[in-house]
Image (cartoon, rainbow, N blue to C red; front, side, top):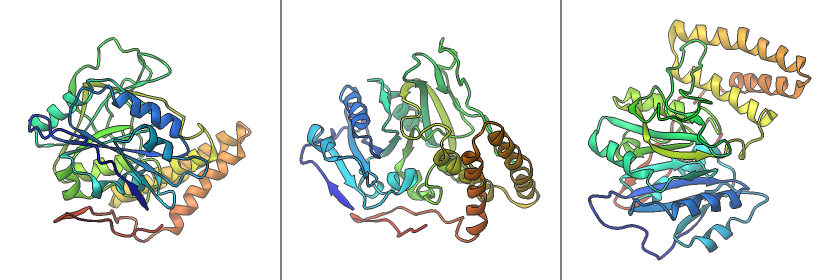
Length: 330
């Protein structure tokens, strides 16, 4: 891993504006990441530090990020660590009271950070918060305004407001059943207490798993409709590709195994394997997409072959300036 930092001062020492460490992950998308960073230059919140983790991009030169944005801390990994692993690797270097995890395929409103920080400052029982998310290429259209609870059997939930036109109906602040990994602000003290995202997922469901762990620790999850982020959906993964379907199903099965127990867990296992898997297999064959059907079955096989260590989650150690991340191999 290679870390490049800037000597330029990146934040103001002002207790009215606690430092926010912004972490984003880049994979073969330096141009998209540059657009996101450009939007941050207009942000009105005066105390931020920026981290970009390049996840061993094979067809991209992330050095352009440092060249155009010298204020950025650029971390280059030696292999693709996935969403959770890529975000996690920057955490030991972060000095912020709050950590903003944000997708690189987003652009932010100038005043989006103030309400999020204010909410967390006002209520220590809140463990994480996500802003209102619009689709970037479909203006004023919701992708996210909070989540409904997961069904413990089907392992399904729904994004509130999805596809709706924004007329101000979700400008409120309220609890959410889960968090949206596209943009989430988390107090560093909560991460130190609960641990980092479980990097066993690699992609998809890791933020829901993290939210479940944070809720089990006694914290609340919130949605804040006073803050807006715009998401360029489907830039990072091809929609309905075998890659996406594999990790979606793998993550869903893994989430069920990590977050359901006893008879409920057994029902969830039965539902996923004897209802969802056959139904989706037939659907994909009907659509002449056997590659997607195979991706579902590969996900099931992965879960069968990984029976041990699935409940492990990496712990962040920050003590006396010594920063370490426990080794984790999949």
